[in-house]
Length: 483
Ligand code: BGP
Image (cartoon, rainbow, N blue to C red):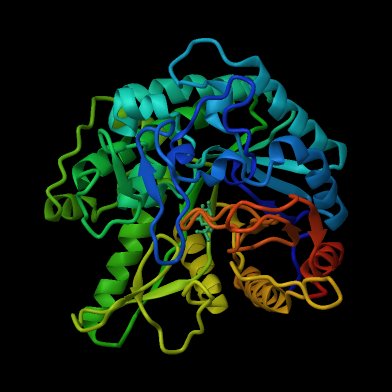
């Protein structure tokens, strides 16, 4: 079985993790610009006032894509990218979020980025919201808990749809929308922040920043905003396609005890299908009522909301996939680390340097599960290995571990296509090294392209090619035949 002829190979980034220039040309801070650097042991911290404290904010300079995008896109083109996923930083277009007029310098910047992509025949795939809610909306309106934010987002989305209607065909509304159910997602994705002071973005206290009710209400508002965006895009240019973006969570039962099986199933349903059903099928799933009751969630659903969800369904489904986890009802089992999801250690899997359990077969399982439920085209828009890269004596980075990881995942994609899954594209995460979302570090690297910057923020920012660069170039040139 082969990859389809027009398969979209490429790479993915997010504005807050690569652009830098956080206060240039009219831009004001987003929520991500208020998050300090952490590391494996120290959680990143949200801090209310960035002018008066001493934290480091990795997004403020990041890898300076803001000034170096031409060089970076040229390297992507050299690898043969067909698609480049990036996000528009909302705060470049509407610095506070509630203005009526957009910031021209922000519009010009992305026009120039998209034109640069088009020059090489690269299709931009644009996320409208990837942790970049304007801090003003978070502070003044309570972020996405406030229904008014739907309108501000709608105005932003229509503005960029109109502006780039001839340059951008593929859009995603909210990055990993399902993580809004977590505390991390509440801050980063939902713009729900503590009233003053600091707060770790990973917190074992479930209700520290936002209650479950607030988080699911915010999610309801994002569903509505996403549905509006789908409808607006169709009106502005019927050629445009809008997709959802879910953090893919494949969970296995730790044992074949029926209680473990049930727990794993519920985890998949609640983590993946709750959002997938609303965005693809246009309705809350059957189990939602039980879930709301069990968690004391009472949603404020207005007249017309459910009709809007039904009307504004996405035309393709995208997701991130890094790892799988396991579920157990045995209280003596302890949780292991993961991509915004935490589970019990699977004895059959190896883990990355950051403890994420590597599971290529799980990708095939996930692809089949989701395709058979939704029957819309699928795209993997994040996948890759966060690893420590060291220069060898010959002055190069021989990242065979990254090549192995990706090779195994691409092999499983091929098998899933043979299973009948309509998979249309693959953008590996962090195609160029960038700031880690969970830890804020630079040393957790995913790229084919190395960026000379260390965890303390020192370095020339020069770009260089790792071994995986040439390997991926071959993969694309052979349309996935040479792995
Ligand atoms: C996803 C986010 C990305 C990205 C990725 C890798 O959840 O959408 O923004 O960062 O995870 O995570 P990390 O950077 O923590 O390794």
